[in-house]
Amino acid sequence: MSVELLRRLCATPGVPGREEALRELVVAELQDYADDIRIDAMGNVIARRHGTGAQPRTLMLAAHMDEIAFLVRAIHKEGFLYFHPLGGFDPRTLVAQRVKIYGRRVLDGVIGIKATHLTTPEERSKVIPLEELFIDVGLPADEVKELVSIGDPITLERELIEMGNFYTGKALDNRVGLYVMVEAFKRYRQSPDTVYAVATVQEEVGLRGARTAAFGLDPHLGIAIDVTIAADTPGMEEHQYCTRLGHGVAIKLVDSYSISHPALVRFLRQIAEQEAIPHQLEILPRGGTDAAAMQLSRAGIPVCTISIPNRYTHSVVECVHKADVEAAIQLLCRFLERSGEFQG
Ligand SMILES: [Zn+2]
Image (cartoon, rainbow, N blue to C red; front, side, top):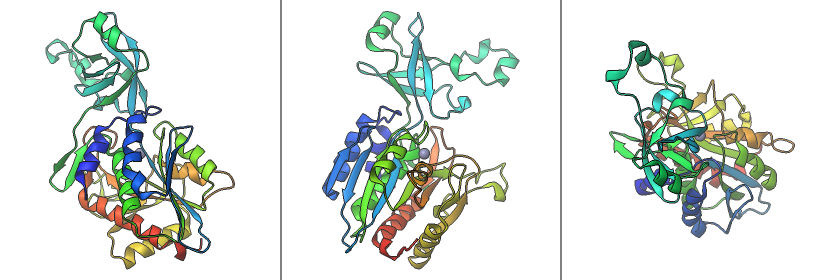
């Protein structure tokens, strides 16, 4: 497994609607393995490999490129930046973080916070609303105004590291899913069916790229690859864990936006059992994936999500287990190779 590629995927910015840098990296990684590759009007990357069967069906894989991020909303007279969120942030996770601002050049910044010496006990016990947070880039206002415009993308900053059995860093949602899709697309030997690997845009703001790509491709079935919640930490009861790190790839049954096709779930479980791939079943009480957009495309499409359990989702210390990542790649590879057995 190439941790180097995962590290590059995590370090490359993918602000919703501004996925261009990541798009370039994904195209470079996939092009030698695809019969053709294109970019659609929304900015989705669509790599295709033809099926070898007599009557190939079409399978759509979807892994989103974008990460929760910000745009510059306003520039304070002293040069501080206010920001507009794209995606679901918990403001508690934002104070005292480093960021990067993609202006005329890339600027480093910090989300500042009033020194504890000056705060009242009430201030210390309440969460600062996101609209009041600001970024300091260490430059005078006139220089900031030259380098930064309203609408410039901003990402949180945190390098991916290996920690024990985990990878930890920012944007593992969904760079790890993207990584699983890229690796599986490189590694699967052949499929009777034509495979479209779609690196989608704008998932974090409402599954938008997957929706248009699914309409355009009109696939026979769809598989999303994304992270899911692992709440297997202190303070939670076992029945609330949703998934557990190190217990294998998760096969999604249900989340807020889709119910996985039961025959597809059965097929994925059967593959995992026969190939001895560690796996767990997932019911996610809140959240959704690109599978929901694919499922409701046109007259409806059978879908499932292959999930990678993730602790501390939507923070800069997201954690996934190395063995779960490999299990997800294995399950997706074997699924593509054996898709002819699926008669949903
Ligand atoms: Zn995601």
